[in-house]
Image 1 (cartoon, one colour):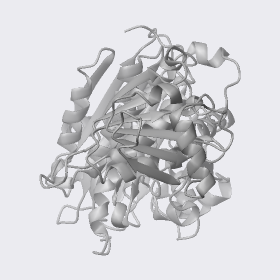
Image 2 (cartoon, helix red, strand yellow):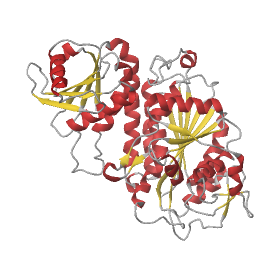
Image 3 (cartoon, one colour):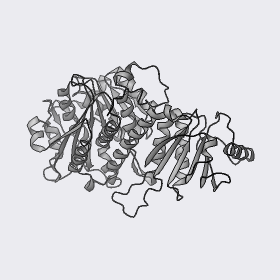
Image 4 (cartoon, one colour):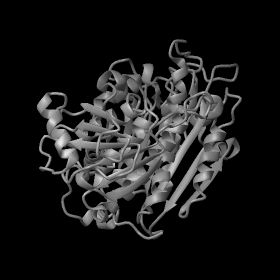
Length: 502
């Protein structure tokens, strides 16, 4: 979807040539004049329209307007979440039409949520077609964001474009079936990112992984016909002396559970078990667009978890890169096994912070549902920054505990640690397992099992948590760390983030 920015008032919007004109109306919208304002007043007076978030009223060939369609959409109090609800409702309604171009008219009180509005439009217009030729091609190919002052909005517009590109890439790879998203396919996608300035990519195979001592990663992959890949991405936007942020994405391209086989119903959704990896790819895509002044490393351990004669067995003991031995009590707890070796590898970069992103536990879905990702952190500042980034981008997370007592269930008679405890607090004990490998740097873990994809009629990847990861990273740039307070509901802009030139 192409995105454009224009200075556009309600009065100017009446003359805009577009397939569909969407006017966002909040309860506190400033008094407007002109044809659209009159139409709104009449619609409200008749009771056919209110500014409640998500309510739409659509005209076909509205008299006096050059737009083929006019959509009045309520955005409630004008908060970021209200704007998202309104734009989502309007674009969803227009997807049923033949509209190819849409102009979104945001008034002054809504323009600060430009990034949210753009992402909502992109999410609502998304259509997956990679392996579905019969799918209806994306109808809406162009969205114009009309704001009172386009010059002032340019920095946020740059963030909107970058975030949309990152989320789109993460969704695309998350949605692809496992035979179209193998570890090697992910590696090729990562190499494709290296076409951008400042990004480089290295891919390691089994021999290199074994040479590094990554015994747990290799053990998970050993029953699959698809060879593992360890993907290492570098974004270099600052001096080499600046410590990088390291992002570690779980890349299980399909998870059968191994010998501890999962139930058949719903197993197709285990293609989404690489959404952590997809979010790292998407974040690097966004960084390539924005070119911020910071260094970032991306680590993706990618493999399949399959049953077979060579598969890990419950009771096996494997040795991690850290030298710690691990008793495998459940082969379906494989994500933490590939992550622990990547987390040990991350130490070599002397990072300022390490964040792993993983569809790790069904227990997190039970705890938090599908609204918020689970956040675990050993560093208070890092936790606060990630929480703030989630609030700013509407990509929410929730702080979870890491009390030492939770690790009691991971004790083993036959190894340094077991890979699972009992069922209680399963998301917490998984995080406690990972914590054992992160003692040398500030660390956070995002369990995205409930937020990375949707089931049912809306089945598909969401692209989360690319928005919050991007917001966090942009806030780490030198200018951003010195900037004045920012609205809690506004994503960090390109100016806030201290962008450098291309």
